[in-house]
Amino acid sequence: MDISQLKKLRAAGKQEEMAALAHALDLYTTPGLSVHYKTTQALSIPSLETLIYQACAQVLRGLPTLFVVPVVVEGAQTYFARLPTIDLRKVTTFLQRQNSIPDDGSGRDSELDALLQEQVNTNYKSDQGILPVWRLVVLYDFTDRQQFTATFMVHHGIADGASMQMVQREFHKALHNLSSSQPAPESQVEYIIPSSDDDGIGPPLESLHSLPILEEVPPTDAPKYKDWIGKLPEVPSKTGWATLTLSPPMVQAFVQQCRKNKVGTPSGLNALIAKVVYSNLPSTTESLNINIPVDLRSDLPPKAVDGVMGNFWDTFQTRILRSDISKQDSSELGDIWAAARKVQSDTRKYMSRTAPSGELYLNVAGLKNIPDLQAFLKGMIGGPRVESLELTYIGPYAPYSDPKKGNELVWQAGRASICRCVFALGACLQMTGVMHPEGMTIGFAWPRGAIEEDLVDKTIEGIRNYFVSIS
Image (tube, rainbow, N blue to C red):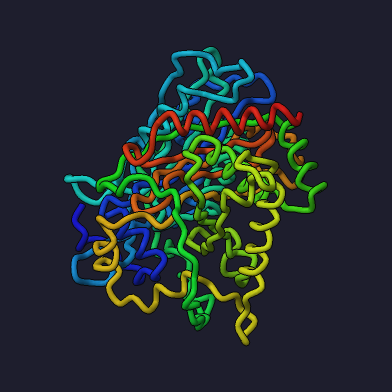
């Protein structure tokens, strides 16, 4: 399919353009969201594949942004166009587990992790024309095809973390509704779904927020830190991927500890991860610069963003020094709470920066002063990193619920995890924590070759041991 044949929708906003260019320059591939589904009752389904195809068709009709593709043109502004059709057979893959889902209490699932590592390293480029910028991978359970993990991978140019939750909820809704009635026979399934003239993409952030810029004079005596930043970035970057799932009692014990110490769970988790990383780095490492993404939807007009896929987020940075965690007058590492309170303080400072208009000062606003984002990104390639860690914390993943039946659904949504590639120029370790009905899953992404592989394993094991010790 030739680009010139596609219906042009609108120019990309700066944040959207950054994501599209990062993909085009092999700096960022894709994120995704995995959710495990199982039936709550014995179902007589002639073909689960048929049911999933039908559900995907409903997802496309409910979220027409999935017909949208970002188009990057050398020397011109990035824009969005609409695909006339999507063939579900070309964006859906069905796989069978080779082993049962681990139930050994380790919180690890190496088979799913291997699949997700492959997915986060697979881009949307093709020599055969313009492709949809999303896909679905279904991993059946080893013994029962009425349980499976559905992973929707979606290009970051059209979706943030909240958007991917919308996709999974729409899929869950379709599974429930189709299974509650008589599904169409396989011979009547539509595989090629057309878009309509009304299908478009939501608004860019700059149409909902004036993006005022806070003019701050940098201090002349700003301290210099020896951050842990790993080896120089390589392009194209290859992502290593692993997850850790923590049980509900473990998560609840940690939440209670955070409350006792008067910090939010995200701040506590940031501090815990920093402590575990420090325990596996040389004692001469004195500083970790931490990037924290923030969902902006609650600060934007609800009618413009509720249920709308798009990119509505910002980031800010905090710093945890080894001395924030070390015991007084000792190099030995102590508890995490002083560092957690520091993260919380920096979070509150960021959230309190408001312009005269009442809007938050957003760091992403600085992008509007960069006329050529492509040249800007290219200029960063080859330079050192400026971030050590990144942690995105997503509050409880809320599965679809039927207004009439609540959560008494034919299909139950359980364990959820955000998977993602690394931003090649970003942090050495980039993590996402997701609360879900079966506890919390933390995903770990790292640029392979930039840090030692065993450091990640030691970090994951250290975090798990901490949760075990408090539960």
